[in-house]
Amino acid sequence: MARERQLEILRTIVSHYVDTREPVSSKTVAADGGMDVSSATIRNEMNVLESEGLIYQPHTSAGRVPTELGYRTFVDGLIDLQPLPEPQRRAIEQFLNEAVDFEDVIARTVRLLAQLTRSAAVAQFPVRAAARLRRLEVVDLASRWLIVVAITNDGQVYERRLDAGEAPGEDALTELRDRLNLQLEDMSATSIRLIAEDVVNEFKPAHRRLARLVVDTLLELLSQQTQSRLIVAGLSNLARTGEDFADVSGVLDALEQQVALLRLLSEVHTDQLQVSIGTENRDEDLEQTSIVSGAYHTADNGSAHVGIVGPTRMNYARSLIAVEAVSRYLSRLMLGENH
Image 1 (cartoon, rainbow, N blue to C red):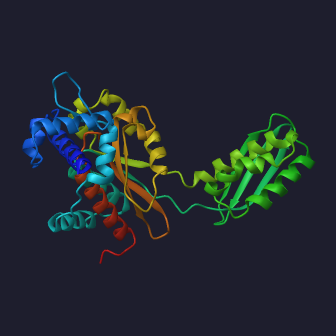
Image 2 (spheres, rainbow, N blue to C red):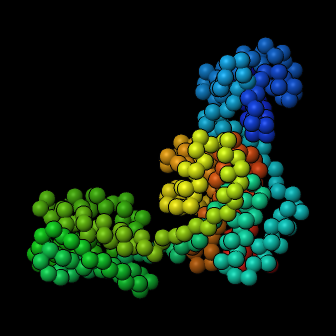
Image 3 (cartoon, rainbow, N blue to C red):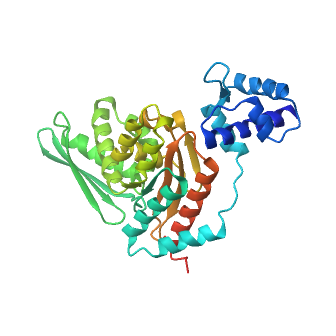
């Protein structure tokens, strides 16, 4: 019973703080939480939550605000998600259906998400399904220079010049080509990356450096066709909530440069919504934010992500509902299932 009460207090603190940006006192919890207990009991429970790192007191004699762990606990088990109202769902469908081409669909998607969530919105352009290696060639140019050629299962050819540091010798190159083709044929960059170190270590010590260089180059070549780009909208929403960030300019720079965000989205599963909060984002500039992301799929087995970026003091319920609804409808549109 006590634990349920503590979690209900946490839910009230998160909801009230998100709405007001004001630290939440025990009196406020007693008035808003609907609990038939005294303010003294609520204060005791708040002390427990504080000792667990779920809330903290920003100033002496002030109320409490949620910590990152508090937000995480709220998102994982306390959030109340209601379906998007039917009029809003129809408005989403109509707005995206009015797009004149694919680029317009993605542009409309981010504008819509930014408007629905009052955050910055991002959409990733889909990438082709990951190619698999059909054949690897390593060609001796002259002296220490090599050409690494990757031929994929869909007939694409990628090549790059490589500085081996010294002439490897034809016997070493033949062994390298034969062994790598035997072990890596029909594998994607993702699969190769998982076993790359073991593959390299199977070579004799004198040849491991060359093997590592070639495998690393191969991974870069195979990854070329899965590189993606983002479109961003709603940066002004973040600028208007600048008081929620220690340095909003760093967040805006990270979104404009896109590199960190693309890296984070590449780690997101493609079959579910995901929320990363604060330092979970593992990028210094984005540690001030929360990111809610979902995925959409295309007819050629491609996939990409959509999502929103905002302060940790965000309306998580509204954000999750909006991202889920938009990403689900975007998939239907891409797969031709909207009619």
